[in-house]
Length: 104
Image (cartoon, rainbow, N blue to C red):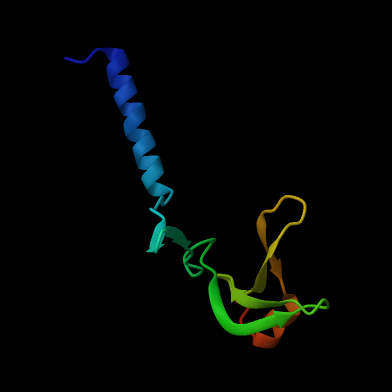
């Protein structure tokens, strides 16, 4: 028979397991090409359900990026912060207006 501390530890481990499953943890998609392993990114399911469009956006510095739509229909492009190196969404309200995809 388990003592009280073992039962509490078992309940904590069980709760952490359910928490990990509910957070949607999934394995990485990795493809082997020769001696290299390349991680595949799925833009439609990663980062909040963004979907890739056929459109591109060119900024004032002539840098072209693919336009994505968020789950609520807002258009954005992915940018990388020069300061932190992290990827973030730059929303494009005028593009969203022209596409007419914004959900109300």
